[in-house]
Length: 216
Image 1 (spheres, helix red, strand yellow):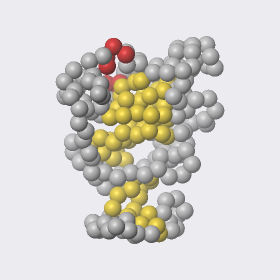
Image 2 (cartoon, one colour):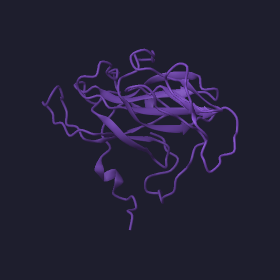
Image 3 (tube, rainbow, N blue to C red):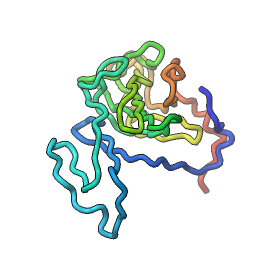
Image 4 (spheres, rainbow, N blue to C red):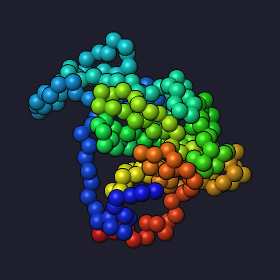
């Protein structure tokens, strides 16, 4: 995986992206919210919420949302958009817009599994993973695909200084438990810009983080 900043070079800091997003619905990453026009914020905030005629997401006056994906409805390159979206990383796209990498906290009973794409699947017996949406400046989805499969209960995550997404399994299931064929409870690194770069899915070895600085 090509990176612009190595782990050994990491000295701290963070980057902010000028993009807003929101979750809506039950168990679906459904909305991408952004202000329609600039409006000065006062001590009272952005003002009261305005009822949404669609009954999906109430926002203050001057704001709008765009539905990007619906569980079990939206078609991606690899199948239907999976159940239980959770932690998400947002990355700026070089040609404008954003790339969203979303965890799916699937464990056992969710109806829409993360598609088991060849090369991207860690454990064929697990149904979690991550999806990637490539969105232009107008909020239109250009591409949607699986970026990691065969993991379990992907909940938390974080963006690295070198521009990748770390997705964390909230599960310590062992091989031969449930339908698992491998152990779980790991962190996986996902390249947000290339599905092919994620082929050969495997946990990040703990030794990779040995040189990272620790907080005093």
